[in-house]
Length: 341
Ligand code: AMP
Image (cartoon, rainbow, N blue to C red; front, top):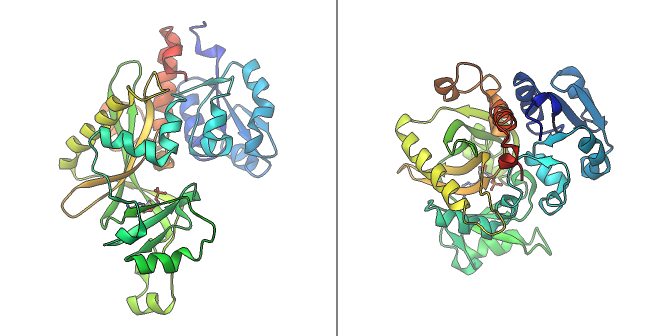
């Protein structure tokens, strides 16, 4: 196995956090490759983060070009869109070198398994209602696989639930979750498989339409417009958290990593970038509703580093660059296997 990074190429699908990942890899000295579609090519021609482009007609056709990646000794970096286009079950069949734990995708993409993992780690989770009849406070109904929160709805009683669910005939795969009134906060972490250390990289909140715009019109107008709240993600907003919350964020991040080590079909546990997604209520409880076990788009505002990475690093350190550095250190110390899934 080579110990020179010049023998490797860092590759990813040209979407989500690809600009950040490829820029970070270039900054660390790697050759880079973006897999693009006719619609996304323009972005990578304008922003020169990829040394090479491979075009496919749809991201779902990833496997048609995998041989080219193998020939280039590429290391593929998964991100949110990568997992969604290729599919968590197909990722297991990838032959190209893959950064991260493949087994963890099964745990993060199944709501029940994810919850089991978070519970074991002692996180404070919103209540789940098994039956609509039990609804006794505001709840959010999440359809499985709903893209970007589109189609979620809120209900306050069993009657309201049955009225609203009529708009989704035949859809039975949903979870009824306590709606936590508070502020959204997404914590971005990096856990090094090489050093065993957890880093807090940054925080963000999402900019969601129309949830983040309803407050711009008066309550009367909201009622007149007969609006339905939706959570479609349009962008991400950086956040610096109240400093006294940092010990809690370290503690829960470490606990999630620790509990991942014993998960079935996941021998290496969780490592690399990941994110905890939740709401902070007025009592400062962090109610976590999701884990993303890979880089999240909320790290995109921090291409030049975050207020937190500035404490550890002398150079601008994005999450994309941090993971490229990890791969570089792994290659140079003959430990590449430790960071591949
Ligand atoms: P998700 O698809 O689970 O990431 O949720 C999409 C969005 O819905 C989040 O970014 C939050 O704004 C909102 N949301 C999800 N779950 C809850 C919850 N239990 N309480 C309040 N808001 C939530």
